[in-house]
Image (cartoon, rainbow over all chains, first blue to last red; front, top):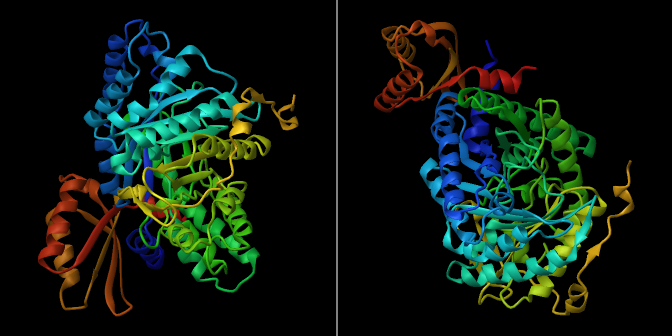
Length: 452
Length: 89
């Protein structure tokens, strides 16, 4: 039989270290829902999502009960809506968002992602219409998440899209001002977006994906933190090995759950995303892992190196534990969703500049950051451009999920609630980037793109 | 289905008897049993096979939870696969 201490170790991880499956996300292709009449298209979208995901939540709950492991979220990602709605002659794109929202409610999932457009090289007419509808769509729906890919290593950076997204983020914040600009928490601007990401708000079902697929996102910052407490003061060789071993265990559990869900739902298994996803709960923080490595406060000198080690060791440990690894796979650093990051930002140690450096070595980008409500659209666009440049040149995914909190200024706090947490408003440079953003056009793809 | 039951409680007379009697009443077969005092607490792990029972996993789980509440025991039952996945290659 299994060793009693191994069994108790697993229970301790679940009970006291917040070990959980962060999400089971069903990817659904909506490519067959296109129709010239938008109301027909919206109905087909609703019907297809409800049909495919009918048993998703119930199956997730059964697995949760049988294995005794919490599965925090059950979610749906769909084909970027711009691709599906493009053939509609006229009509308001928000109708599509409403249809997605209603379907998500009907299925009982937490979020639905894919109100998205891929415009890294340029806009189609449908892309532009969808992007312009994002503020209203996010204000009028509750569960819909949106993302826009504005750059890839292969295509370079679409600076017209960068400029537009600065304005869209501002409008979204204004339309959801009564909830602190919550709409912006559901809007991600990507460079090198991945097609199989199970995490929100950036999940969409890519165009190379099958009809329907199950992707699983694991978590476990608390477990890694706890493991590192047992190797206090030891060398980084030991730290890296400890993280790898822990990540291996967490991922094996994710793989098991993914396979079980795939089999029960009769839907192919896609990937396990090896991400360390924090929550605002104490003991579930990525920042506290970095501090455990010997940093007084996350954000001080050494933070980037610590995060680089963590991110790499998580991947190395996880990759052998899963048959297919994908998504974003790495450590997330969403400020408002991480208790340690919130504390470090409030203290002023964790700044926007340091976060930007950290995004060079972690799996995503500037995530869940609140900035003053009077931050200009140009400044937001310039922040997006900087992040996109990091992603494009380093052939990695980067993203910006930023909230210009209406009426708030540096030192204020924005409360989003639940997993989205709360964010201290961080300062941005007052100096203008308007001339830079006004140029438009495309920043060419870097040398790294020429691999053939 | 093979599952691991864990029972944690302050130590007292008769815990094993109560649990095994309940399992026998549902025709759940015990394959292995391990009991120790860990950190001052009665800690028991039991490997069971639920396929011998006419009850479904959910019914067995509910009966154990009910027993746990009435007898002040923390009882859990989880499919054994999860522990195998985490601790065996």
